[in-house]
Image (tube, rainbow, N blue to C red):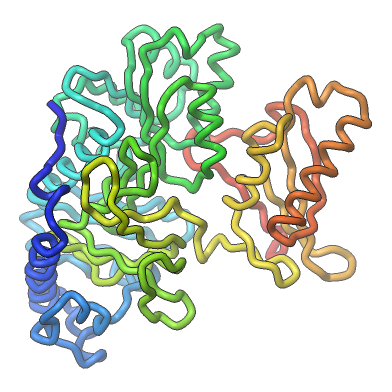
Length: 434
């Protein structure tokens, strides 16, 4: 069974906006009545639920930041009775107090619905075998995929993250048809498969849903080539629900937003002004149907833009462009702004490089910012004559300088010398604050 909610996903703009407004008003009433944090925040802004009579009025509501979510730990955002909760998830908490996501039974049902849509967009149907390589536990990735696959009726392998050799054995022996994990880990699997003598062309694997970290269009090409699959970008946040907020269909031209559950806006990250469709800015999301921990105008820090052009797949939901970076991982090198994903895009199109790199930022003797990009190269290149290495190094340097305006020291390193991760890849090492 394909879980494609055509009535919702193909609805007219007018029908969808009517639903969004009704749900927004219900959410406002809920948080104003039950969440002191939001009641005080709205009162300070001079806004009450009655002030929102159209979707445009959402701009009157104050923005919500991640720091504020941390300040409400653990139950300060709860909009229901604790007795109604059936599940709790949190962010990793590696950078401070974790952010809490609390779920009622209705929230879990919604999560299963949006993740079923996500997997369906990648071609998953009843009878497929889904190998879920996202981590289970407090991290939302594993269970989000789990609920979606169960809703479709697919055969689910809850292998979680790590144990690469076993991942490959399971994939081969149980006939996995769809893989879910981080994009960087999928390439790690491709490397390990060569060592194990496994050829992806001989496996029934047909597609993958990859998210939880930024990745470029050129990395998609690399993944699809090495794993012999169709690779789909998926988007979500622990704060909103986990994975399932938006995802790519077979057209792979932006991620369809589940607008019946989440309302997207794009703002200027400096001024907070709402930007028109097509303009790049920070993605802001309001949950429209969440019972446990609903959020108003949450600042995701993700940079993208909205796309409303019709999609050939038939879905009429707004799409977000592939993430262009994050306001909090933007690097400023001697006055030039750039994102790791932009560097990755340049590296991935240069023949001879591998899809593994690390960016080291430091201050030199002159006290100016300096950037070193360590790039793995193919075995044949690394063992080649020094002149060929120097030509490759110069080409990478010149293309980064031409396209991004940054002058970086390029260090070519041998294959497998950059640490691999079974979760999110660590791309940046900033030594300026050490």
